[in-house]
Every structure is written in C-alpha cells, then in structure tokens.
Length: 251
Image 1 (cartoon, one colour):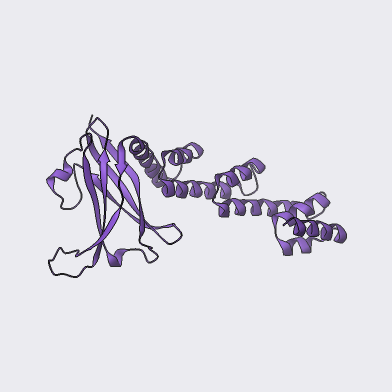
Image 2 (cartoon, helix red, strand yellow; image 1 turned 60 degrees about the vertical axis):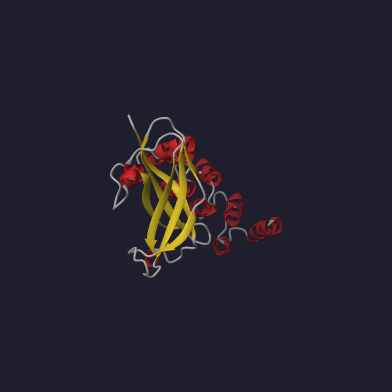
C-alpha cells in the first residue's frame, strides 16, 4: 500500500494538475495527494467533494463506529451531511438489531432522538427490554426440530420449530416478554424475522392458559416458535438469534 501511494504521489507531481489521472484512480489516496499538490487548482473544489463522498462510502462499507466517528470529525457539516446522517442512522439500527445490546439501542437514540416513528418505537421498546433482559432473563440454547403445521399425526413435516429455555430471575412477576427471532444467512446477516412471547396475558393464537400467567422468580419456561418451511427466507442458513423486544412487569 505504501509503495502504491508513493508512486501515485510521484505521478501526480510529475504530471502537475492532471485531474484525469486522479479521477481514473478514484481513491482517497489519489484525491488527497492531488489536493496536497494543487490546493488552489480549478478542480480542487470538485476533488474535495469527491474525497468527502469516498470517506462516506468507506464509513458505510466499513461496519465500524470508529470509521463513522472519523467521518463526522472530518466533515461535521459536509456537502453530503444529510445523506451521511441517514446512512449512519441505518447503520446504528442494524448494529443494534445485530447485537440486541442495550448499549447499542441507547447509542441510536442518543445520536438520533427523533428518528422515523417506526424506528423510534422499535428502539424504545427494545432498549427497555434489552436493559431488563441483561439483568433478569437467561436464554438457553436454541434447538430446532420439524413439525406438521396442522398437528396431524401422520401429516407431512412441513414446519420448523425453534425452542429455547427462558429463565426469569427478577423479583417482580413478569407479565409479558416478547422476543424477536431473527433468521440469518451464511454471513450472519438478518434476512427475516418474526416475534413471539414467552409469556403474555393476551397470548396470540391458541395457547395454554398457563402461558398467560406471569412468570415468577426462578421460573423457567420454554419459548417455542413454529413456522412453515415455505415461509422461511430464501437465504436462511439455519442459524437464528433471539433479541429482546418488549417487556412488561407487574405493578
């Protein structure tokens, strides 16, 4: 990398204001070298604009808060500031969904206190649930199996079940706790999701009455989700992740 950078600097110095060569290279190093050699050239404004776009693309592709911090430090109010904030917000949302950690939901809401309504609703609910879960919810290993979706004794195994033991350690009765199951591809990217509770007073669908009763301290229940095989995302790898989504405790 150092050799190619030195060569580029030599080429630019030899050619003078050769903006065509810089455009062809179209790299951060090329534009920085050009601007260093030609700070007052007629194409310097254009070069600086393109350099900012490349730094934004580097932050977008880099999947790192450090790269975003570097971009905003360099361009606190740049030419593409609105697009940068939009991309950064999307990155923060995806990062929080990926980790499910309260610190990442908090970082999103601190950076963007007024995101779109749907994002804000998800973030506030997930922040509350993840903060609670990190203290009082223990999630065991997720296991998978096959099931007949119509519950016919000799019917085809056309569905997949995902189950996990959930233990509650808090003192106040847990009235409702929802998880978001995230289907992952081979690279660990989220390609689909559903939501389902381990306890809820108004359980969706037909569920045993005991599933609607609050969980007591030290109690373990099985969280279980069924889905038809044809409903699974195309790129689903077989790996899933559970994310704390919503919580409600007794007053």
